[in-house]
Length: 401
Image 1 (cartoon, rainbow, N blue to C red):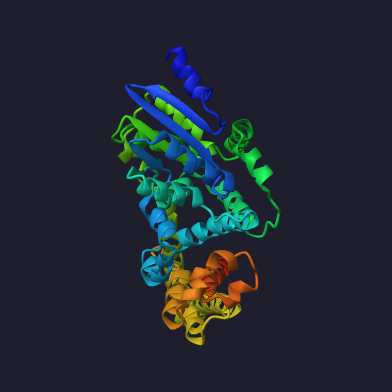
Image 2: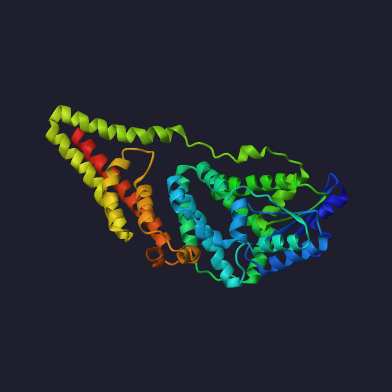
């Protein structure tokens, strides 16, 4: 890389510290590092695109996030039953939690999350400039991050996301300016990498390479890319080193360890086998008592969970009936059954779906908003069934001995 390219890399010829340039292989890359809830970033994106007039503008968005930003009313068409059937409800909850955190920060600065991306698309359309969506599907990123995280560290992720929901810390444009500073972000990412290296690799490193590859292969000789500031240095490094990757390799969700599959089937086989053995060795009456204990140990806590969620009476009854059976199969949990029934009986209203990102940070709204109540009807009966499985399993094991 020559001195000119080094100057570009450091953004030395730019009037703004958040605009970085790199010239390679007859292409010029202009990378804009943004904070997703910053008014300054919105202005910077608009001014840079109009000034540079590139051949194409690359956005750190996937197709689904692009549609949700450009047409926010798409939330009204949320097919919740399909999401539950596909067992993607937990992913949806995490996505809404993350969106809620950004929205609350955006509310304090007067800028909705992702507005710099919307502005980039709008200005590009006005100037007849092509746009390209260059980010990986957020669902794949979340699932890869979860799959790559060791079991004992998953609780750290869950607790961090939940804590972020109820964090009421104020943030100003000046503080956002500090977040855009590359040195601060580098230190933040180093800290994430120290505590959760697997998560950082998926959320940051993989996406840096993914974004860089998409930007590199975009048609045109002059490319503007609008990305979060935390990705800028990784993208520039990947472009500079010409680090080509196979997109398909990091678009796959790694399968779960077969160990968990074996454990998932071992538990129900143990319970069923134990009841049969108790019946053989101690008589059918004793086996019947153990079976009844299993049904009550699973059904009651799960039904109590549904009751605590203020679920529909039929959902509560379903929790009691379903939990003893779903506990005997790793294919589906009680929570998915109760969530589906709750969604069918009490579908969320349009305004509740539209307000979910705001309501999710207010505890009382989890019971008032029908969509959030479906989440409760998923989480609480599932947790009750989990407790019941352990209580029933331990009791049957004691009787077996």
